[in-house]
Amino acid sequence: MHHEIRKPYIFPARKNPSVFLLALISVLTGCIVALIILPYEFQLNQDADTFVEMVMQVLRLFLIPLVAVLMYFFLKEKYRVRQIHINADRLETLLKNLPGMAYRCFNRKNWPMDFVSEGCKALCGYDRSELEEQRVLWGSFTHPDEIEPVERSILEAVANDEPFEVEYRIITRDGDIKWVWERGCAVGVMNGETILEGLITDINDRKLAEQALMQAESYAKAVVDAAVEAVITTDDRGYIETSNRAAQKMFDYSGDMLTGRNILVLLPETYHEDYEEFVTHYLSTNESQMVGMGHEFTGKRRDNSEFPIHLSISKVQYESECKKYVFLVRDLSAQRAAEKEVREQREQLAHVDRLNTLGEMASVIAHEINQPLTAISMYAQSSLHLLDNDRISGPQKLRDALEKLIVQARRAGSVIERVQQMSRQQSCHSEKVDCNALIKDVHKLAEVEAHIRDIVITLKLSRLLPTIECDPVQIQQVILNLLRNGMESMKKAGFRNGNRIILRTSRTATGVKISVIDSGNGINDKTMEQIYKPFSTTKDTGMGMGLSISRSIIRAHGGQLEYINNSNNCGVTFYFTLPFRQQISNGS
Image (cartoon, rainbow, N blue to C red):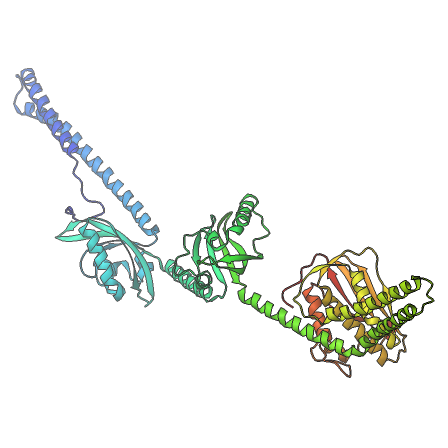
């Protein structure tokens, strides 16, 4: 139950029972002393002229303590009033320094104020007197949408004899809308009305900051949800806190099914140990090559199906402690499918180019095969002639003829085998290759055509070269294409710079460099602009795909096909480097 309050409410009058008791004791003491002394005085003054003198003595003895008591009361009250003024000044200073307005009001409609502190002017724009004289009521400038919920909160708190705390908007004298925070409680009843006391302070800046933060969070969430990549945040133990729509779709989880699960649920068990080692290393050293960088892993969907992913990790750090991690996951399934399609198309195109090259070399190949076939026929006839001759001295001559026949047969077979290797369509595969041996094989395939063109192919091969991981058929195709282009250029130049074309191998810091150096016309500025463009050619015949396919093949092997004009306009040098321990890329 609320107690009755009367004004002034800040410093109510207080009764001190000890003061009244002290006064009563003083008066009784004076009377007792007078009664004791009166007979004694009467006997001493029995010869006095009148009784008046005796009475004056009694009154004098009685008034002395009474005056002392009154002086005590006067000084004590003066001290109390002084303390009240000091406390009032302190309280006034305290109220002025409060971040807002202290108040006392009646709990009825519009909350009429009985007292407000000096902070009211800065808070709402109205003077203190306007509110205390109730010319302006607090509820009259409370935002209309806020009055009902505020009333409900206050009534519920008063009914439960509890303090209340509310946030609502007011409309200041200047027409600005301002957010305020109020905390108060019922302190008693005056004239039958409940009295509320409390504090109201300005929280407009805080509310604006909260609204800006909410807008920023909504914007960030919209951006993250619109991202194609999966965005997942975890705590420092790896438990998922948030995930966007792309993550839920990518890993086949709906809604908040991922929340609370460990990030390892999205990786096959074969990657769990690697992830744990990474986390342990990072927590112990605060260093990791993985943070901020991307790595390719295998992801696992809810149905345990696996797919290739690109995973990058960043950390969200507060002061010196890492609070959470952000995982950015990209599904590589479409990319892998596209790379496979590009690889197949490149292989098909390379196969077509090889067939075209072999078609152009058909007469050369026929000439190269014809020579061993003619020799085989000649040695076979000689063998028959020796068998038909009864005067044969022994089998040695026949043996020699048959051995020569076998050599020529193998020669023809090797030509056919090289043609078959070039014409066969096969998937790209990598194997360890001796570059010098590979160059020699290409030389054997091209030397007949070079001989017909009256061109000399010179080999300058570096010794002790390491083996290289590559597809030998594709590299042979590139070198053969560069050789034939060089020979065509030398023919067009009329061999004015000589008839020598050089095949060179050398070792570099990163791999084995292979160069084809011709002595033709070189490459002019116009040709430079479109030299690698498909279907661009300076030949009278040809598809214009050779250099484009060759550059694609070399890129797939981790290198670059480049060229430089030789000095004195004596032809051009095409070169490329096959890196050490380089796996062939799936894409071009």
